[in-house]
Length: 101
Length: 207
Image 1 (cartoon, helix red, strand yellow):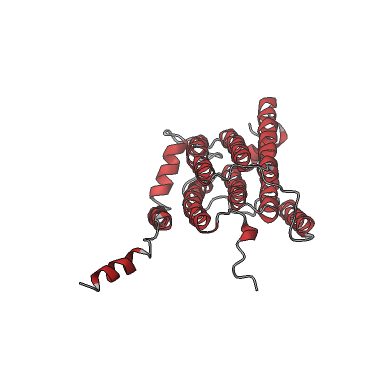
Image 2 (image 1 turned 90 degrees about the horizontal axis):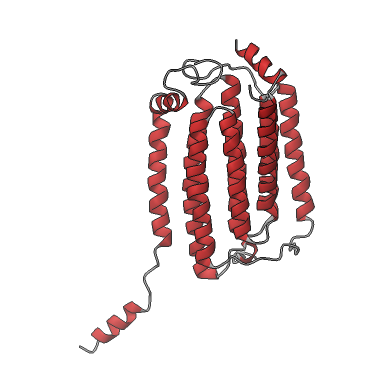
């Protein structure tokens, strides 16, 4: 039998935190997107663990929806990055300061 | 039965399970730290692939075999390839200098607040014992691990729930995907050049 759910949930919490730190610290938009994917994966791991602990397959169905939303988010986000790169020649968030007073 | 099996699961895991968990946890942590600390975006994307494979192993370990396959196909196969495609397409696959921080004190603050969040999650989990009560939200329990006792196995259970209980959400995701595709096409479309129109009117004016 597998390890108790607490181990998986603790690991997921740590991965979520690493993703959050990356999202706050990094300035490259592409890497910020990857950090969001990390956080989504941590949430997926939590869902699967709860599905096992509670004996309810609803958690696994939710992982399915998270995958779809992540795919849609990446498609639109990368479209915005490409459009923005055409205009400003940069993928660094700090360079997008047109509204700076 | 649920509590008995949970107790048995928590009290005596077999050594291969411990080994698999430890190995994939190491892979996941190294990969996720690699995503955050890589100077080159390509290396970050490859570290992300590593993390995704580790998570897929943990999915299999928790008897979510179908989701592990979907995780590899959709995440590692599609999303990360899309990332790599955009990185190569834009030509930003150069190492950047991440030692410079334009906003003073932002990194320590980000670290502190993220660790506070982690501590909050763990403290909440320790007091609530991770699980807050409900044994079951929807559908019949098929043994303590979802779908394992049903004759068709876990993918069949997943599909049954997806097309009955979660049908509306499923249809909504279909609409979401269509909207995302249309949005990506609109964003990627090059706007028509504005110089073309005045030339046409000027050439028509003398005539």
